[in-house]
Length: 470
Ligand SMILES: Cc1cc2nc3c(=O)[nH]c(=O)nc-3n(C[C@H](O)[C@H](O)[C@H](O)COP(=O)(O)OP(=O)(O)OC[C@H]3O[C@@H](n4cnc5c(N)ncnc54)[C@H](O)[C@@H]3O)c2cc1C
Image 1: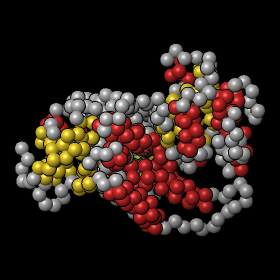
Image 2: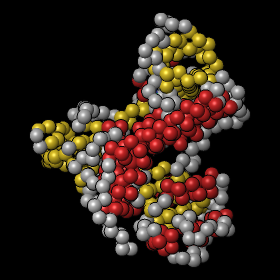
Image 3: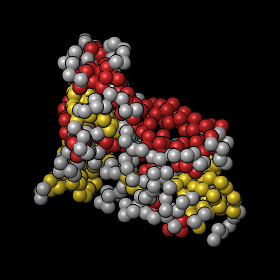
Image 4: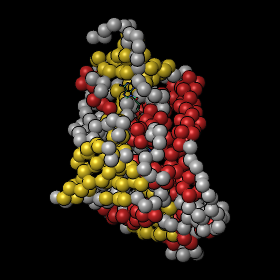
C-alpha cells in the first residue's frame, strides 16, 4: 500500500530520463498523451551526464592537447604547451554537459511533460511510489508505464569504489591527471577513456582478462588501435586478471594473474570499467509482476512490451547492445505502440556500433562471417584511407573501409570501418543498408571531393568490380 501521500491518476508514466526515457516521454506527448517523467538523479541519464557526452569531450581535449605535445610532420612544433585541467573539466561540465541537460529540460517542458524529481518504486502492478530527496512521496496509478531506468557500473569485490578505485564517472571527473593510471577492462568504454588519459599525459596500463581488447570487434579493426596505443606508450596486458590491491606510500599496488603467475604494478588511480548492470533490482520490481531474466534484464516483445502488457521497458534494461541510440530507438517504438500507432515493431538490423578510440572503429550490419552463417553469399571490398586524398591531407592515413554486399543482388548488408572520421561515415552506410540500397546506388551518388566519404564510394566501386583508386 502507498504510505504517506496522495495517489495521483496518470495516463503514461516514464521512469528514467536517459536517452530512452526522455525520448519516450517527448514522443508519447507528441502523440497526444499526458505524460509524467520521473528522474531520481539527473535529467539526461547516464549518456548526457556521465557517459557518451562527457567522455567524448574528454577525448577531444586529449586529442587537442596531444597534438601540441608532438612535433607534426608538416613542420609544426609547439613549445611548452600547458593544459589547465580544472578549466578543461569546467568546460566539459558547464559548456557541454549542462547545456545539453538544460536543453532536455526545455524540450520536456515544451512538450508539456510533467517532470517529477524522485526515485520510483513499484507498490502494485499499476502503481509507482515516488520518493523525492526531501519531503513526502506520492503514488502514481498509471494506465501505461515505460521503464527506462538504465544501468550502473559493475563493482568488483576486491576493488570497491572509493577515491582511489574509480568507476567511469570517477574517471571522467578527476581533478588532476594521474601519472600512472591502471584501467581494468579493455572494452570500448575502457579503451576510450584509457586513450584519452594517455593523450592527456598519463602512463596508462590496461588490464584485460580475455585474450584481446575491444572484444566483439574483428581482429583487423583492433590492430590499428593497438598500434596507436603503442605510439601513446600505453601498456596493454591481455589474459591479465586483476585480483586485489594494497595501498602504501608508493601508491596503489595492483596485483594481477597471468596464467598461474601473480604480477604487480603500481598506480596512482585504478579505474574499474568491466561493464554495467541493469538498475532493475532497485525498484521493487517484483511487485509489478514483470519477469526478469537471469541477468536482471526485462524480456520484451517487438513493441517493447513486458509480460505485463501495460508496462514497457527500453534501453539498457533490455537485451541487446547497451547504446544510447538503441535506447532512443526503442523509446519511439514504445511510445508509438502505447499511443496506438499501427504496425510499430523494433527492427535491429542496423544498429551502428562505434568505439571512439584512436583511430575510431565503426561497424553496422553483418560481417562476412555473419553473412555466411545466414546463408548469404557475401562480396567484400576494402578501401584504405592511405589512398584517400582527404585522409592524407589530414595526416591520418591509417585504417580502412570494408563494405559487405550480397553477391547476387549487390545489396549492401554490412560495413566495418576503422580510421579517421568513421563515427560519421558509418551514417551513410547505415542509411544505405536500412533502405536496401545497392553498391550501384552508392557509386551513382556524387560524393564531394576531397572527402573521407569518398572511401564509401570507392569501396562500392570495388564491390562492382571496377574500382578506380585502388
Ligand atoms: C563512460 C560511458 C560512455 C558511453 N559512451 C557511449 C557512446 O559513446 N555511445 C553510446 O551509444 N552509448 C554510450 N554509453 C552507453 C549509454 O550511456 C547508455 O547505453 C544509455 O545511457 C542508456 O540509456 P537508458 O535511457 O537506457 O538509461 P540511462 O541513461 O542509464 O538513464 C536511466 C536514468 O534512470 C534514472 N533512474 C534509475 N532508476 C530510477 C528510479 N527507480 N526512479 C527514477 N529514476 C531512476 C537514472 O538516474 C538515470 O538518469 C556510454 C556509457 C558510459 C558509462
